[in-house]
Length: 356
Image (cartoon, rainbow, N blue to C red):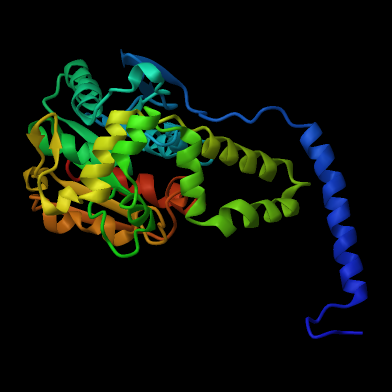
């Protein structure tokens, strides 16, 4: 008998038995697995300021690029997303092409970091790391690659110190925070940020994570776990799944004052666009960005919609501006198979043309 849903008793029984076998196999898979590891590329600490550490990554061969790349990731997740595993690593892809790659690790802020400000993150940490690299390599300027919120910080730093940034690469970086499709910004504008920070001090990681997951509740709370049943008997696929889960929930708390400044200036007042953004009392003008700029955005990005990133074209002061439109989402731009082929190669070729 076939009902209106085209489901028979036989097909239902087959699906139930297949799920049972998957669950039994999954128990064997999980029992045989160790903790998943991340961050596969060798690295060494080269500079530190408090909890903030600058790492240099080592490839199989010595770098051929004369000017190193400093990567500045967002504060809300851990930066090992750019080196998640051997076959999903932006860092490894850049090293394989001869680039010299450094990454800032912001660490895990605690109560002692409650009063860190945007000036600390932009001038003290990015500026300190970049000055270290300028001295270590004997160069006046370094390539700066900013990702998401770390990209916004990089825009601030490069605007205030354009002479120290040779080439600027922005990846999924928000510039116009008030595009109509920016749900995260719409939510943030309804928050009393002063009350939140004055009450909590640092902003808890679990609160931030729940907010991000609620942007796609069906996809991130239900669909992916239902889909997990299909890979329970595949150890490699389960390791990849659990590694990503570990990254998603390995989120640091946010330093209270920096969160207050960033939320009010950008999410609520959109100051990159309207003007008046300040870091440590100094006004930030994106028109001061006169270095070559590569702006990489993701077409299906629900956190930083394409228009939010593409606004940089009209606001920057550079006459050497390039865009890469990536067919994927905010996370796929680092870990998808397409990303491994397209992103590091595009960055390498773009930098090579501006190596002098």
